[in-house]
Length: 106
Length: 106
DNA sequence: TACAGATATTTAGTATTACTGACTACCGTT
DNA sequence: AACGGTAGTCAGTAATACTAAATATCTGTA
Image (cartoon, rainbow over all chains, first blue to last red; front, side, top):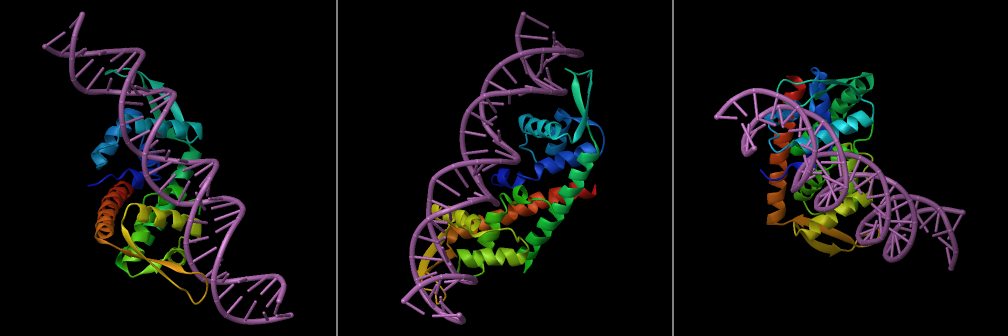
């Protein structure tokens, strides 16, 4: 498959929000999660730009905890604004994907 | 609904390719088509940047024809490369949307 | 005739976003 | 001591949709 970079714009942040909403997690783990989901080319740097953005927009709460396997982890949880953003993301996704599928099949 | 701009990145070009594949058409008509589809905020300028890009990448054939209602129209049809691009777009779309829906429901 | 409005195209500049590629740092194993 | 896996950060780049304006053609109406 060709490059899906451009198609991920606007959806990758939503994916990260969804993953965080499932339970406290940190950047490195989010990256692995996305890779397992099928977005194999996503690298740490990309996810960190997203988590930084979430911080900047005050959509997450942060807690730093030590790791047994390396340097400290920055754990994220969604706050209320983050949950709203997530709901809004899925609303947009449902809209856009329904329109696209409409166009595809008609 | 909030701004869906970012989510349209990477998919709007595919929509335009699909619309052109249905039959010879021109920028202004493509814009109206997208609006009818539900992307009500899409304006001419946006579509023209896309059609220009399609021209630049040699994905379309062009024919200029007079209009009864205004200035001449630039009609586009997909060439072989354009059709391949379109197929590739839907392949990417199917991949990304299946992954997103997987994430949404699991 | 003159003007408004719909039709039709173009383009310079902007904002957002994912990616690249590198760097720093901690830890356990060899 | 060296290495690989874990973990976070950041400056710069490329791609894309949008903004906003300008230009041009045609029809209908006052």
